[in-house]
Image 1 (cartoon, rainbow, N blue to C red):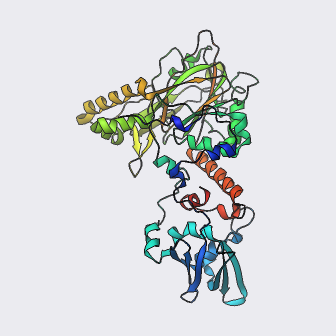
Image 2: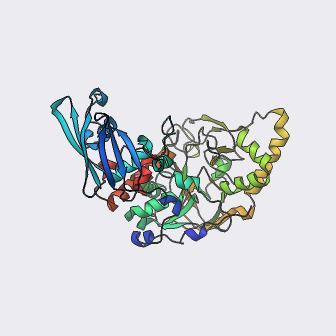
Image 3: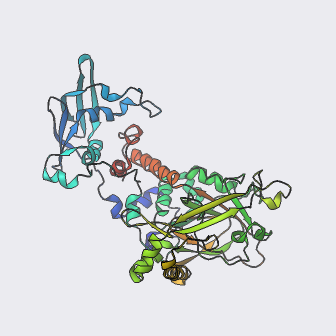
Length: 490
């Protein structure tokens, strides 16, 4: 397989201003389907006001339920974004008495009536907002509209994400990747840069953030504070470990790290792997590793690139790796019951717990896209592989692990002090960093769940859209399904 490069997309240090960055353009697939002031050409109530027909200037036309139009208006919610009443809305029977486009078709006014004159109400809607929903909730009234209809009979397929377009169009990379690099202090001031960074976590799935701060000390409770505080402002709170007192872990290269286990012993070779392989569901979606002390050199590998190579050149192996269940398992004995590392609290009872996760090495989504890589040879358990496929599966597994170590699939990068390497732990594998002789190294690690990451990106995209068009503000952009919101924020 000829690896496709994405290095041309990224500058070495992404600390340029938002206006310059936006001027460089946005990937075309992220602009597909964007709503650009799609005005209303005509509108009228039908079927005694139970529905409303709306034609847009692009000649698409849809029939909306009047009840849906009324129920969707943000005036039904308070400042906390909750509905003002717990009473089921559909106990009322609103009809559209009259509808009228105004402000050159950029808005729609609807006069609702409900049994008595006292219950009559008039609401206004933005044309772009209605157009974004139309293919999902409207009944198409012509051929042009049928071609853009989005909904199956059962409705939306799930929660989705504003990152779905990037996910479906990811490009594999190898040694040619130029690591995306950001300046942390600039990122704190620039939400557009934060969006750029979060989207890079989907593709290519890794980045370095420099200059995030210096710790006050290198102990297990203070070494990770700069990283934790920085990420709390950019994304959200780190995952809480089930036993460790802090939300981050700390590794001291020259302080008997081998006592914490093979993963922490820097004299022990460590093959390319993902983290959280033993945790069911792999909760650590984004992985952060912060150089609190010392500068090193390291490498990452694109699981997507290796998987695509196997799919093309070794399809039988690929099938086995995507269908046969392998087990990763561990008994964690690293921490004491007070949350400290056991080596630092020898007199405290251990907080020992078991972990097991059985899964394919390569998990595919319902459309056949690679969703997740789970790989760790040091934590591979005793798998219940069927007798008849054992030899053939292990042959495929050996080929997979050997490919992960080939230089063509690895991106080498410098990892300076006070910087953090961020990886999509469901895609990007990492190995052992190269530590220069006589270097005292302190490395801090932590994780964030997929839902935290995706919803932070959602919030930042909503804010970005509000800056572009203050009329369609948070009241109109919150509570929307991701599939609809995508058309309003791109």
